[in-house]
Image (cartoon, rainbow, N blue to C red; front, side):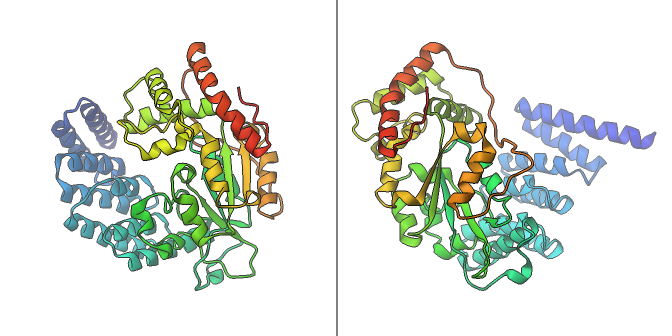
Amino acid sequence: MVLENTKTEKIEHLALGNQLKTEGKLKEAIAEYRQAIKINPALHKAYIDLAYLLRIEGNLEEAATCYLKAIELKPNHWQAYARLRQGSWEANQTEQIISGLKQTVINHPDIIWPYMCLGHFLTLQDNIDEAVKYLQEGSNKNASVLNQNFSKNDICKAKQNPDFLIIGTAKSGTTSLYQYMIQHPHILPSLAKEIGFFDLARMYSNGIDWYLSHFPQIPEGKNILTGEATPSYFNRSNVPERVYKYFPQIKLIVILRNPIERTISAYHHSVKDNGELRSLAEVIDTEIEMIQGMSDPSEIMKTNFKFEPRYLVWSLYYYFLKKWMQVFPKEQFLILNSNDFYGNPAGVMAQVFDFLELPNHELPDYHVYTKGSYTKIDNKLHNKLSNFFNPHNQKLEDYLGIKMNWS
């Protein structure tokens, strides 16, 4: 009976803490989370929620301690690691976090999350050599855990170049595509699906060894490929030249979604994750006005603007793809249509594996990852988008010699 009361009381404190947090009553919410932890010191979720509010309140030392305690309780749970990486920490807390993560690696050497997190914080310290060490170790361990064709005995000393990149486009199915690919027995994943090395200056400045440490070290002669998927590569200037500098023979995969659907999906994603406050109609009108009359709308990314035009502009595939194909020969590209991909995933994956010169590998299930849900737009807005995109889509079809059948 006492145990049941304690359990009920713990749940009540957690629920009240969540409610108070939603109402913006942070100090009261912190008190409730503390009480829940007092009742049950092994309450993993309460430490994460408490740490988040402590960080907002400026109590960084205790916040870091709470995140590390959550990791100690559940070292194979991703959330505390992700929250640590999202936070801005002072030097003392960074040292505290690194020390705690190193202890986690010692205690749990086969769990991948602490290696990734250590790589992140050591990189922030500009301790690139040590970051590379932990990232590489994590990459190799991750590969041996996920793929029975790769073991610790297979690890070589040389860095591994990626064999393929999924370069885009965002909100078009890159996550599902990558997840299906890495289930092939001859493909090993990178440590992170999206590394962002080539399009982010702060990442690119870490150097090529830092990038390569995200891939498992595969000996020559083993028919195993590896690669990553960063959809923002498709739209960013200088990325084709940067990739070509290091990997001129790499195979490039692009999945393109109906521009209307991609635009709407990107908008709703931004509302949810980035705090976009404008209406969809306002977003559409603003970008159309900015783009109209431009011979190359992709160049708008170099101009000054109040809002980043990432909705309609990023759906104008012709202009970005042409820049990639001016650097790499067309035979190094595989262009996929997301309508085909979701309509016949097994058939499209056979096409992907053939492109990579691998035997086909069918999956028992083609689960759709990161699927969004939102209401259908009205016909007037749909027609406005259709009229805007049609001439640009025609340029793409003419350039590739492929019918996309978008409407």
